[in-house]
Image (cartoon, rainbow, N blue to C red; front, side, top):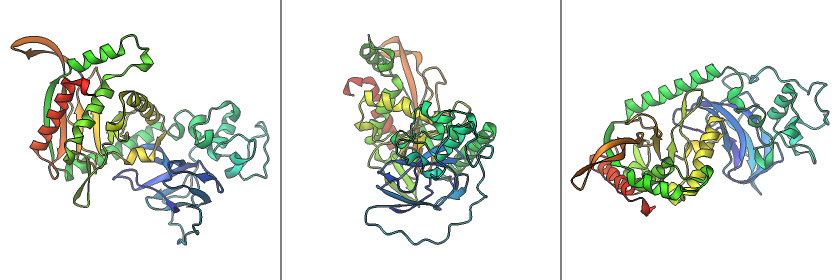
Amino acid sequence: MGLFVMPSLGSDMESGTLVEWLVAPGDTVARGDAVAVVETQKGAIEIECFEAGTVQELKAQPGTVLPVGAPMAVILAAGDAAPETDALPEPEQEPQPLSKPEPAAEPAAAPARDTTVPAAAAGAVAGAIKASPAARARAAELGLDLGTLAGSGPGGAVVLADVVPGGARDIGEPASRLDEMRKAISAAMTHSKRTIPHFYLSQTMDVQATLDMLAVRNAGVPPAERVLLGAVLLRMAALAVQKTGTLNGHFTDGVFRPAEQVNPSLAVALRGGGLVAPALADVPAMTLDEMMFAMPDMVSRARAGRLRSSEMTRGTITVSSLGETSGEVMAGVIFPPQVALIGIGAPQMRPWVIAGGVVPRTVITVTLAADHRVSGGREAARFLSQFEVLVSQPEVL
């Protein structure tokens, strides 16, 4: 791999603040391992490495604001030589503690540890509790015993989010972080509406057959194992998108690049306000049971500030659902560089004509926002038609 740099986690991201390292020099990492936590305007994100290797050097200190592309660490694969790099770019600000100043050593009341071991490598000591430096310092501040905490980091290491619920999001002024997130959302959506020629197409669909299928499937099943309507509709949307390639992919540098997989981003409303849109990978290949595990897991981690960088960058289309007790219609704004967004309204009981008679049926309204540079009304209508076929014939799932 060589030089590990600050990644771009969205088209509107210019810089990020390094919150904590989850690795230390000498650690071996595999592809997909989380190596650091970075705070952006959209919250705290776990940054992953994309190749296996050994951590040679950490070039940035926690608290430093780094522009996208700035060197963060050196991670070498077997046989690689250390890269020659220029001096680090000047950070946008001097490293600052993310909460009150952390003590150089634990207070006297804290459990004693071997002070000859560097803090960054303390978690790697044989027999010691594995924990990131920021987690150790924060636990010492709060007088917590690391041995009582369940670690969610690499190899079961205790990380900052395990010490403070919500992780970095709970440090500092929440209102200020929320203001920054709203500014980021506002800037991104304003840019989207200004640069993407949106057009919208809506269709109301009879979803009663799908609800009846779920009622049979979930009968006698414990609540934790039931399949919910949201998971079914997400899978149906992904399957319909597969048949309409011009809605799935990215528009960058004036060129549309279709995606090989359908990775729908889920619009997740955060409890304190704001919105993030992490993505599931290759939904058409997932079973409904797999989706019912993956979706709640992703939502809970999004609200706890523990998303991964790949989840923030792999999205190829966004699906925003209003749930089962909300508005009837939603027309959304496309998340660049994606080229479409699917808005699914809450189910509504309506009179519906079937075989010449009027009967009560549960319906949903699906609204597609699409980029007119890439697709037109014909492609949008094909997607809605495919979606309606799946909704009316859920047995094909």
